[in-house]
Length: 269
Image (cartoon, rainbow, N blue to C red):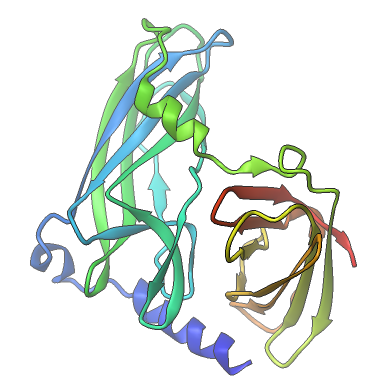
């Protein structure tokens, strides 16, 4: 579809980093690591806290047609075994006639951090590249560091609130079925996702993430027919012409007025 090719072109423009951009825009965002607390299994519940200047926004993991996805580089950390990012439900933000997905004001992004050696402190060193947008959208770098000592078991209110804001799982939201039908088109594949679930409230936006590298997915057209939420979009290979989809790796996220729902995997439709 023309919409797919246009959006890919705009995305490529967004990912070009102007050498002057960071110095010209000043400091639209500041960040810090919240050390959080240690859980009974030895995992640390920490968070990244990003404060945006008034009028600025940043992007979710799947930012939409005109957004810049965040990139996390933990190189230089010590005693870091694994880190899992837990995303709060994002906002749908119109931008220049397109749909972007992201956050405004303050973003607290919880981290489940597993130390390599249990009982020892974890020193986190993060090079974080995010997209920020006011009148223009540019990449922005943050260098963050923090030490997780494991001395505190009391939950941090800001992190608890961010965890509570994450999307419901499919089972929590009453999803009884999720299918994905694939059909070849000029650009790659057309995907039709059909989700059987109660309404999420208001206008429902469906985001489809392929869960595989080398595949770009367009904004979807979503409509509801009773208990069925149907979303249609394009999947386009970013390199070469071949495309193969593993439906078990697809994530469907529904954003509504009342709640957000994240569905892992779908079956053939």
